[in-house]
Image (tube, rainbow, N blue to C red):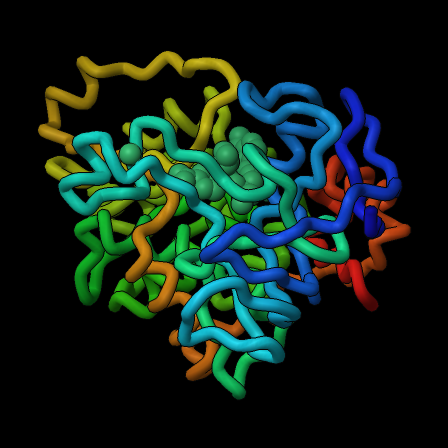
Amino acid sequence: METMKAGLYISEKNVKVDTLEKPTLKHGEALIKVSSAGICGTDMMIYFGKHPRAKAPLAMGHEFSGIIEEVNGESAFHPGDRVVIEPTMSCGKCDACLSGNTHVCNTLGLIGIDSHGGFAEYVAVPLHRLHKIPDTLSDAHAALAEPVAVGIHTVRRSNVKVGDTVAVLGAGPIGLLIALTAKLAGADKILISDISPYRLSKAEELGFIALDGRKVNVVEEVRAATNGMGADVVFEVAGSNITADQMIHVCRTQGQIVVVSVYKQPPTIDLAAMHFRELSLTTTRCYSHSDFATAVSMMANGQIDVTPFISHHLSLDEIEKGFQLMTNPEESLKILIQPNA
Ligand SMILES: NC(=O)c1ccc[n+]([C@@H]2O[C@H](COP(=O)([O-])OP(=O)(O)OC[C@H]3O[C@@H](n4cnc5c(N)ncnc54)[C@H](O)[C@@H]3O)[C@@H](O)[C@H]2O)c1
Ligand SMILES: [Zn+2]
Ligand SMILES: [Zn+2]
């Protein structure tokens, strides 16, 4: 049995480097030698023992890029190709899948949650989950196509139009990427709130109006910036009870709220306040295959530059440190693990 090195989730707050069997390929799969893999909020949920599906021992990591080492089956992909992995795995049989909406499959799974992912030297990936990385895009940046695709899908599901004022609650990687995409979609003023000075400084660096939720009244600030009306579109990306309440009050009459957060506890929201002003509420999940391809293309042509998002590059041996850094929003934004560096 050939083995490889992997960063494994063992139990609550316990991630360590160990050996795993090197994957062997089934028909229709490629063996990927992982270049870069991002640590995401979902990996943190697994790390804290709170993910409903992830089973230890697991090589997490669903945001990753690499180089094809071997292909089993007829394909347009070949050994040596640089690729990024679209990690969603759908059943192909449920109503959502049959109507072409595989990203809301009834039993949607993700590589890195339901099977071993990118925090390992090698991963076996179905060929239909691969996207080629254009020459102008590095492997490290391409690894972030997944969160970029979340931003693209979210903004595509919103009503953001040229000249709109947008409020984003939460300046984590996803909130910031949504803000960036809303700008590309034509938004004029973009206000983004957080409670972490580091993340607020990132928001400012990217050209957004940063609101410190610990120091100012976010609802009043958004209203003041919009002649008392409120934002045309509000994205809730902080996942807290406070922001789930604020989203209603920062939204203009007949405006739209888009909930992106995955709440650890169901928040209480004031539906009466929503009805009174005819607010609409939209939710969003992952991305479609076309959103993912768009993410790769917009990163390759320079419209979306993820350089400011990457706070650390770490080796696989440093994975534990990576998870510890991720527990503090003051110290990290996007951490990339490089299993073969
Ligand atoms: N819909 C989807 O498919 C999808 C995909 C990816 C992530 N998500 C969800 O999106 C959310 C954001 O993801 P992320 O990776 O950016 O997470 P993150 O934890 O890095 O970001 C959340 C941010 O919210 C901030 N925050 C906390 N309380 C706040 C408050 N009261 N006011 C303002 N800001 C506050 C935090 O400081 C942090 O910067 C998470 O809930 C995640 O689960 C959803
Ligand atoms: Zn993710
Ligand atoms: Zn399905």
